[in-house]
Figure 1 (tube, rainbow, N blue to C red):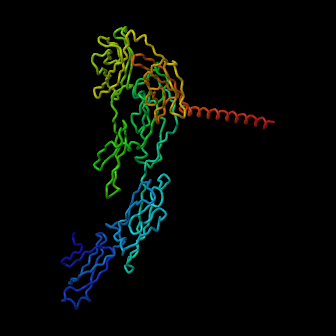
Figure 2: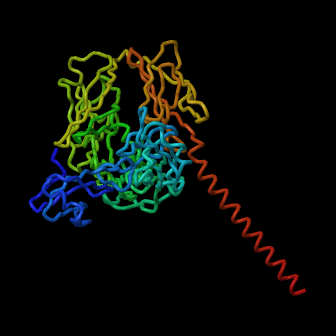
Figure 3: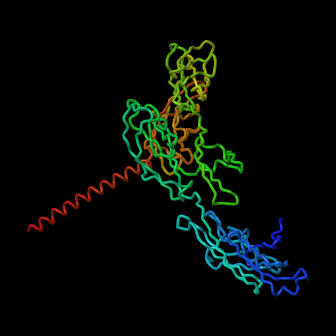
Length: 533
């Protein structure tokens, strides 16, 4: 370490500036008779934060006694701390960088909070600042100032007591979820609109968190039976556009679920000191947009925020994960049995194929039509095939189950107890039970809305855990099959009262408003008649 005290030719002695006492001792006995008569000139140089002492013809040894016990380290004038708003009472929120010693048998200084003592206190025998109560930035506690009194044990010193300001900034935590300005929205869309056409932009979600990463709202359309029709292309803008062709002849009314989120995906990802992002809780979401906050280690005021969008979703996907169909030997060749469909987010053409050779069915490369290809070497039974679709960037797969019947199998029939079941969603996840006639137990398979419902092998229809079906009336299709090749299909209509309650509430309010207006109009007419009389 370089010596801070330098004697120059003139001579000049440069010493640290804060709080110094000077004592002179004669070095050269040659000038002992003149020492009391010489004048020591010294200059305070505030710009360089040093004290320059210049003597005339004499050299003096300056003994410097520094009273630094209550001074902050590195010449600081105040202490700046930053804490998160969910800090718990009793936790240490900072360490005061004071020169003096507070521990041991003979401490140099004593510390106590003289302003803001209801918020924090000094841990006895230390320089640690401990929080007293819970903080809530949403209630206006964004920042506050504490004043710490430092008392030196050396009462004869010139600066035996100093007050130190501690400025505390409360950092926001993500404790508020975005809220839409309405519980539901109703819009009218014309059919055959071009892809990318804006159909709805009159909605917004707000977040009460501190302006910044935790309050940035990201919009999306939740997965559902009709989520492929509309999309929110830019997650930062509440604008809904057409994603795929809407045919009025096939669908006249549908529902989609809008989602608004802030930093929920931070639970799935982790960033290290090198800026490398990894998956913390698999599986990760298909899409994520989050904010990376960086600041200098020794200078928190120097910081920056980056927005990072991550897309782990495949650029192509089938409409359904699995398909099934039934064929008979007497069926004509090239009979169209099923049409499969895959969606490409790139907008490029989709090509279909089968992952199996010598299959009893074929699929059109551009149409997705599954046709009968004949039964050269196949007996009766259930066959599993793999459907493939590609957009020349990625390839996706779906399962195709083909039930092959012989002439004798055609005689084997299986029917549900009812051609159509009517169920209703209540407080319990179990909705009801379906069954087929006969003693043989079939295998049940739900063909649609699998993300919201499921049917077990006992025929019990249940809700998937923690899901809310986005439909007032949900229509399910269940396939029952046996090992002998017999199959049967049933339709299940599920009423969802909770989905329609908001519409009913709005209608009730409108009726009350109309009745109130009619009543007010009658009062006006009555008062006018009384006035004329």
